[in-house]
Image 1: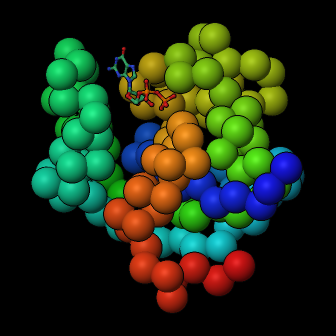
Image 2: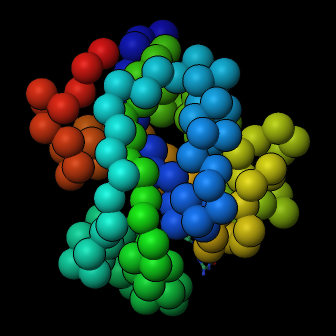
Length: 140
Ligand code: GDP
């Protein structure tokens, strides 16, 4: 297995409830290293661009509204098999389907307000990390 990087976002439902530290503890316990991190307020344009892949989905407008409803914490995570490992610790999109011990099982409020985003492939991870960070922001 190779050391990879992936993009994580702690979503507004989690920052609102002051769960950043608890989410980070889960990520670190899963063997992921937070190599870059910034708390930001996404603009409408940034959220639309980030989720452009979902433009045709019926929940796109709601998702953009949710992601701009409060601060998010964007992170680059590094570790062995980081993309898959992060997806595993995140849990299923719908918290009702998420496995015990996962971030979404413990913290998510709904299928939309599900506390975290994680890249779904190494290719998308590279694109998503570059969306928020430049090389010198990332310290491994
Ligand atoms: P993920 O990779 O597990 O985050 O899931 P997707 O890529 O399928 O969806 C992206 C994000 O859109 C999810 O994390 C949710 O915040 C939101 N989402 C997904 N499915 C639904 C849905 O059926 N309804 C609503 N309102 N939001 C959804």
